[in-house]
Length: 86
Image (cartoon, rainbow, N blue to C red; front, side):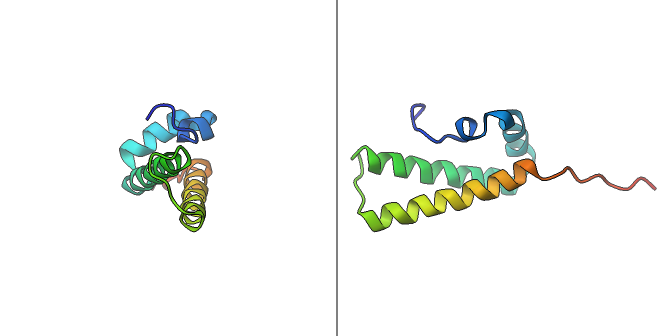
């Protein structure tokens, strides 16, 4: 859904190029960004009553989205590893 709020590009507009790059080269980043998108879509569907959820489930989903977002942000802002040149 293109109109789903809280997309990664919307949350981190200054890191859009890095997000695209990491999704292509880093399997872990790709997996957690996919998880983020799935949880975010589930929250949106619940909030718009397409697939209603109780308050406890909504709170759990929001916590999971925040955990994933924090991990993604950490990966976006970590300094690049520079390998030693022999």
